[in-house]
Amino acid sequence: MSSGVSVRPALAADGDAVAAIFGHYVTVSVASFEEVPPGAGHWRGRIEAAARTGHSFLVAELEGRVVGFALTGVFRPKPAYGRTVEVTIYVEDGATGQGIGRVLLERLVEEAAAAGFEQMIAVVTVGVDPSSAPFFTSAGFAAVGVLPGVGHKHGRRLDIGLFQRDLREPR
Image 1 (cartoon, rainbow, N blue to C red):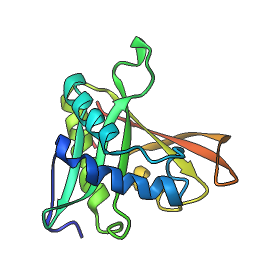
Image 2: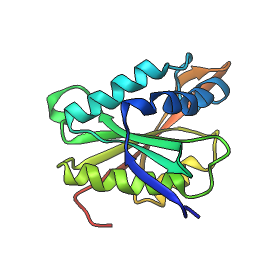
Image 3: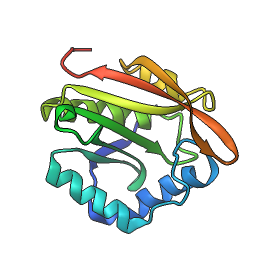
Image 4: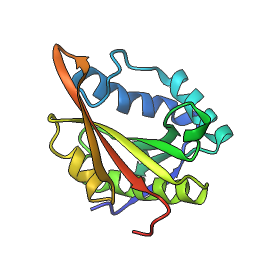
């Protein structure tokens, strides 16, 4: 399924591709609660910040083209949450269902654990895309809660689900 996919650390030059992938989801879906797609400059800044702060920002390439990205970031800004990261992962529209997201997530989990992070959190819009929750649970994340009605986008009231994986436990 993910044959031919390579994963590498993101470079500032990947900002345009990442912006295009994410921009699609911002514009046509509720996968992201952003309402205006961040531009390439925003993503270049996130890529550079990840390198400075010990977080990972990865891209997946297929036939030399960036087709997905994944990153870890601060879960909450208070110091007590310092060993917990939040995961963000997106695959180019039209490239989903090929195992690209799985390859990205597996590498992200490995890197986060190696960096000393202990917990990984995924925040997912639930009740809309039936593939997101199973994607995370099949990767060892536990569904730990739902926050009903916390988002509003495209005229819809939206729930988010919280999924957690303990990075200290072997899978």
